[in-house]
Length: 67
Image (cartoon, rainbow, N blue to C red; front, side, top):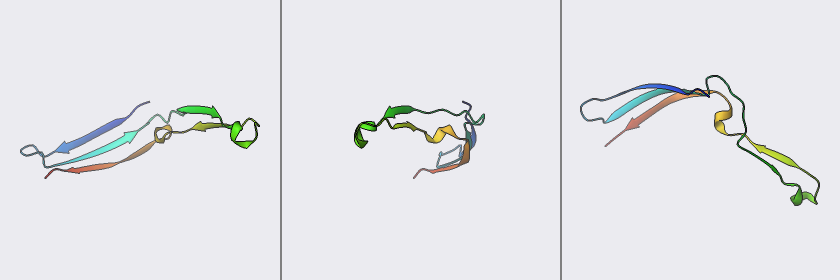
């Protein structure tokens, strides 16, 4: 998985920072957990998987302010 970011920070007092980021640039698909929750529904096997936010590409801007 490839995450990239770049940003700027105020040099003198580091009061603010702005960062552009893109996560999972190569769009790798994966799950973080699998399980059988069939016991909840009378024993019939019911399989689930957990998709984290990073399982799909996304990008944005982070802004930080320090007082």
